[in-house]
Length: 135
Image (cartoon, rainbow, N blue to C red; front, side, top):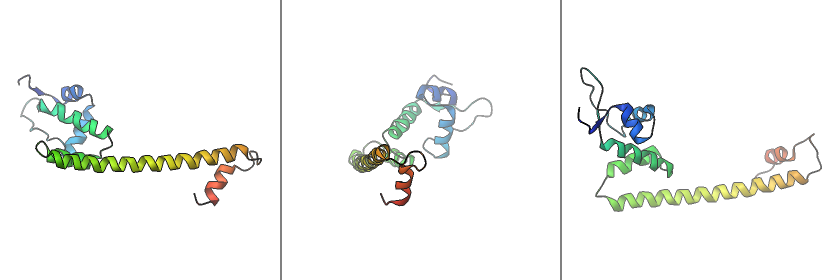
């Protein structure tokens, strides 16, 4: 084989993932598993390194694997559609941040109430408040 192909182990190392990640992406059809030769190992094209890195980095940006599949299917030449998907993802992230900030505020308030409560350890004010009040 030429130096422009990788075994699964070398692909995983070059893309900075483990072999099971490569196999998982294959099961999800994010990358195509090359045919197995009668003898030896499967050989993956060099461009798979960038594809696997793209998948991992897109996940780190909050894209779900199904969304990444869409991005990969669009590919080059569909920049406007890719940007639209990214804008949708950004809006979802902003909504999630707002939800997390709201949850932070409620939990912080509950902890403050709990710390100023005189109930002692017999009854936890935090647990009681969460159980009995709509937040």
